Image (cartoon, rainbow, N blue to C red; front, side):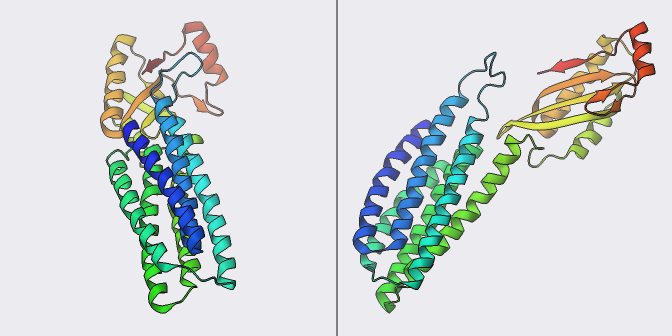
Length: 306
């Protein structure tokens, strides 16, 4: 993965320089927009490279879950940067529509053709490892670049044939819209992870119902599910069972964890077993009468599984 990112970074920086110089020479806003877009790709690759390195570091006493969210944070920063670039491109495009400038369509076509080859090759390499949201954010960068550079080729051909210079800023607006669309999904997904929302594709109702159907489980409450990283989920819950010895409750615990792993891909769990119904308010609180009863006869037992 790191080798793919390293080669992608070198190729992207080279193309940014080429596109910027060609855009200035051809007076093409579409090419200069591509230079800005590709500069954001270079930043995205750098952030992802650093995040991949951080994610390989082990957990510590200060970072008990390790650095699993480094990639999520990198993806969020990449998407926000893209949105800012899209706004800048759209602003310049609107101004250029009111004051059209002559462009050199042949330069647009040649440079964009080189960009399609380069961005397409990088996107294809990243697609193979794009299961992680961090790498997927870079993949979307590069896929968007491939499509937008292909559009620049079509725009250059249209200008060459018709002489309509408005095609150049119109293409820039289309590129900006594409960037915004691709970034919005990454922002939503990463914010959900950073705010510890329920992971995409999982339903608390389904999880609760599945667990309550396990033999020995009477009730599931105070249930929380969140993501540690883009593909690492955690669960914490209170589970009501009969008043049985811990040696018997371990069978229930093992079955719960087996179901969570196989059906929901949740591998980190913290489960508290109880044999009384508790009231949930700011966590799980046992009523005063029951609390006094347990002070006299012992506390409900809890289990933690990792």
